[in-house]
Image (cartoon, rainbow, N blue to C red; front, side):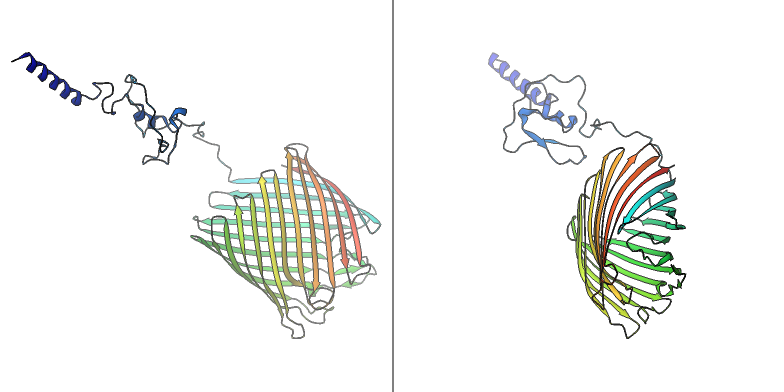
Amino acid sequence: MSIASIVYRALLVTGAAGFAVPGAFAQGDGSGTDNLDLLRTGYGSDFCEPAMLCHTAREGAEGSSVTVQASGQAPTPQPVQPAPAMPPRPAFAPQPALSDPAPRFSEPVPLFDTELSVTLRGSYAVEDGDSSYAASVTPGAQFSYARDDLAADLRLSAGLVYVGDEAVEVEDGVAEFNLTRNFGSTRRLGLQAALAVGQEDPTGLDADADVETEPLRVSGNVDATLSQDFARANVTVSGGVLRETVSPTTLSDGTIVYNDAENLTAISGGVRLGYALTPIVGVFAAADVEREDFDAVSDDLGASRNGWNYALRGGFSGNWSDVVTLEASIGAGRRTFDDAALSTVDTVLYGAALGFNPDATTQLRLSFDTRIAPGTDGASATVNYALALEGDYTVNSWLGLRGSASALWQEAADSDAVIRTYQAGIGADVALGANTTLALDYGYGLKEDSEADPQISDEHRVSAGVTLRY
């Protein structure tokens, strides 16, 4: 065999070995462990040097982020590196956490929670040039229960008020129970029951100089709502019953006036259909009906106000990441009476509510609503327009500020009588300790009544109170 033949056969054998043994040459076919591109998926999405002009693509089949090169960019030459001492980690291996993981065991959230409180408050009021002082004590308690699909709470409070040389009166006596039950992720049931007991403020804007003892009003109601989601659609059905009684009024001359005509029993029901056009904006339609029955014929009207209330509304709602919430509606309302001598009341119903919550320290809410209510002082019914603005701002851990303004127009349905009430106030809550809060408030009220004498009255009120919670 010639020398040339021997050299030719040696070259063939060497070339075959190069194909059979990957990595025998530094460049190879790119599949060797010295190729950094094969190791990149083991470093997570943060492995991206500036010269690579790369970005993070969507997750791969294994759920790990994959780094890819920007389209149209020429690959950056990589220097030859020796094989690592340890084999590369597979792409699907667990990645190190970017932040400290949550502890394996967290403290359990208590199912039951109890809070007891007592509030001591004093106020000084000036109404039409006459001044008065009132002191009150209000004990309260709250009991709550919560789990994944059920939440319930019970709140109790009762205020005893001493006004000047007047007798002690009951103010803001409330017992309220709320329950929410979730049946899966698409169905919710809500129950609410409340009992309220109180007397009108003898020094307030609605006070009557001829009244010696204000009547005691007792009101109780039970309401239920059931909501069901169907993809983008939502249906809510509601129902409730209300009972309100008013005790006799004692006048300054000793006369007793019975208020049986104000004792009311009401049964209501409604349905609301909603549809989400987008994850932010939705539309809805709502229909409500209510039956009202009074215990006696009204003396000032000479007829019974028993009848039906109907309301039909349509509108839209919006929710921008819980920062801005909006709902607006328009509809028609009707009030009919069993007594043929009383005319049916028809009106246009307007409603709007705007909320702004940029962060946990600031809450603003603006609302406007229209409704038909039972009338007083010779009116069969009134059309009420209510406008309200509320705001809260938490300055720091020990100081909170709040303010409110409202306006109420009450237009008699069968006469030109109009009652306008305007109120505004500011307040501050100061934390004196872990369980003690000081509340400071100033409020102003103005009332215009075309049928009263005088027609205009106003009130300034300054109050301060301390609340202890345990």
